[in-house]
Length: 113
Length: 115
Image (tube, rainbow over all chains, first blue to last red; front, side, top):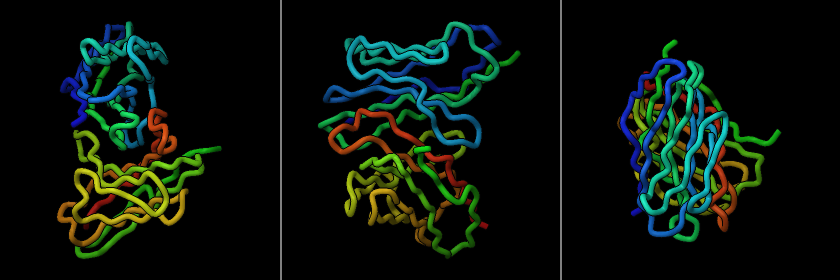
């Protein structure tokens, strides 16, 4: 079945460091891919998305490129801030094949000044 | 403004009681979902619904029930059969059943505690 695998956290960085959170997926169709962010005590918010191969999603300095050849959608940011501390979820939806959203287990990011 | 609203934000339940969590959306979305999140863990799907009057079990449906009598509403009942109900519950909705590639919108969550 379809699945999403994320790197385990927590990821601990100093402010202005480079961030990568790995995400790989398994899907039989042609899914759309998403990154969501969850701040403490809140629901999830969409951070960025990509709907087809080679698309790059970007928002708030974060980027992720849909790589069909490696079935990956890694999240990157060039210079993290303390305010980026949160839990990040990779997810997919697979139109026409499965009828539910599938999330990774989440990766906690902690940024220290 | 359009969005998805969960209530209450905090809920306390005595052992043996059923409780119902509310989820309402005014986004005209067909699909709605309930997830459970435990501390330090990811999201686990409880139930989902693609259309009014229809819903399917997710990965951890035991001890829960839902209804979808209106497009806007997808309440979740945590029954006394759920042995470990203390968790953070998230409701989400997205697009329509012909286009699930749209982003999901989440409510702010309900934190349920058994006392």
